[in-house]
Image (cartoon, rainbow, N blue to C red; front, side):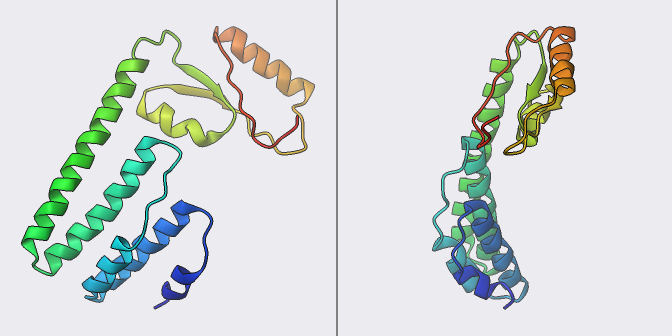
Length: 171
């Protein structure tokens, strides 16, 4: 019951909205309220994420919960259908991983400097090393000392490229 009022609140972040639904559906399952858990998840449109992997993982989490509910209700045919969907999603995730590994396997330099820690998942997946994550705050600029450290990192590790992104900071 704790989650139910939150499910009616508008949530801008689709990851938070999905997480709330997953937690609530788990709570419903723990209480044996499988039909409510199923309704909660099947009546929710998963919003596109930042990348295909995020979309697949979100769908995997939802289908996994739906499969569990169907099994608990002894609805074997529906559970099998969800299991088949899980296997297809797993196959897509594995293909995406293999694609990334293949495309990045020829990199001579496996070190990065990034502009936030959000790339740590990429580094972990593909055996890359983040030398430094620049967490610049809006309205602040890197000091001369920080710039010198960055230049030395680039030179010492012979980094061929530095990629930037616009993140709301004018610095």
